[in-house]
Image 1: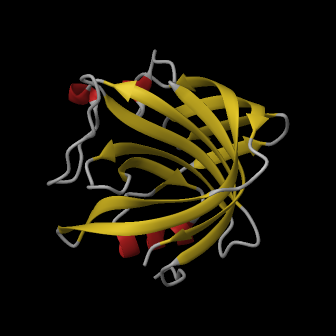
Image 2 (image 1 turned 120 degrees about the horizontal axis):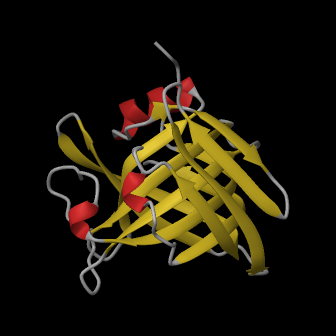
Amino acid sequence: MTEYPAEPWHLAGQAYLSVWRVPPAELPALPAGLRPVRVAGSAFVVTAWIDYQPPGQLSYHELLATVAVRGGWRPTGSITEIWVDSATSMAGGRALWGIPKDLAALDFRHGRTFTAAAGTDTEWIATAAFTRRAGAPVAPPTGFRIAQTLHGALKYSPVRARARPHFAVANWNINPDGPLGYLTGRTPLLSVCLRDFTLRFGG
């Protein structure tokens, strides 16, 4: 069995996010008991390329999609698709929080423009390029929850993070026949880079 850290995980690195508006009928399946947040008839998906780096407990790359769901006064999301290039992260994410992590090859190139690509042995998933724009001089703290199914019940996991946010221009290329195909042809509402983040995941 692959060993992994006990929760909470303390992680750090760089993240590149896009927010998408999606018709609720086109969303991927959510865990039983969860409903998407709707505004003017639309639901919302956040995609993220994340490079976990030292001094965090684990170092690996990640691509994920999270649907904003109803969760009371705290922002809450449910991860519907996620790929990592670490067997340790995959095993821990599934066992501790019910996060449906799968393995993939992820290639990240950092610079003024960040580029990323993800694919499996059988298909390509997506590529993207983020060009950083103006940013905040401070790293404000933020908190949210991730809701997944674990052992047949909903598990809400708290997340605390701090990062330096920068607006970004993002260009995505998504496999229309792949697992993120429901985003093909759409333009993100907003894209940001979260520089030098620190994150505490889990209770």
